[in-house]
Image 1 (cartoon, one colour):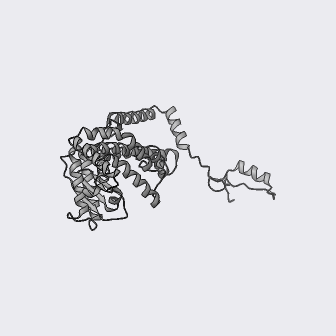
Image 2 (cartoon, one colour):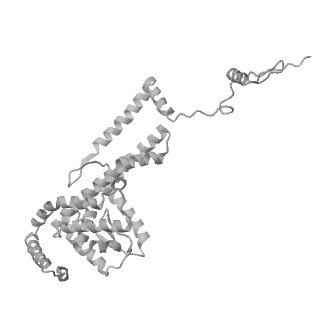
Length: 344
């Protein structure tokens, strides 16, 4: 019997010695290609998914139907949930209810209390009393009188911050109080933070995030890039400008609120000027386009533009006549070089 040998179609056999020149290797490779990955480097195509989607769009009616339903339903959902803010009339996307916003505020309140419970000043502390005094005057002009208001001052001289959680929970860090320089400056801060709640900015932020995350994920999968990169692109292009718009809106509403509550709106200009100086001194100033907040310098300019309207708001309030006399009295003391603050 003779043994039969099967020759592999991928392995050439030679009947005589052969010199493997470069031209021979090229000819053999074309005739007997090696499996991908053994002798060839993989060929990457970053936009292959985009090309595949284009092909499906051209060739598959079912794909076009599904894509149309997704885009149509998403657009309908967004348009249906476009609304105007209660006070300024700014148009925005928001699908989160006020009730759900309150529930989110409760969870956040528990987390903050656990984190800072050892640093919260007692109710008898002068800082806490001052914050409560200012808050008591602002609440009647906030349209949020039905909330359960609580004041917490956190002892941290290094942190210049304050915020109000949905539901009426007020937090002020002691490091901010020297920048406030009195009740009028504190009214600037608290009016701003209360305004965030009055127009439901927390709900708007959650709604905006619910758009950014799916868009970032979809772009990451489509173009085969990092999801972090696509999120940062949407963040700087959409999220941060929206946040700065919210901050400016809260500045305006808070200024009108403090003026209507008989506080001096000119103190808001002075507060943001001091904040700008403190940020520069502490190296905390960042370019506005990189930040979620307007720069303190720009805030000073906007406050000056709104000042006349704020003064009219205060003149129309219950304390209008009395405040007018007090302003004249204070200016007279300033001209004489005397300290008017010692009367308070």
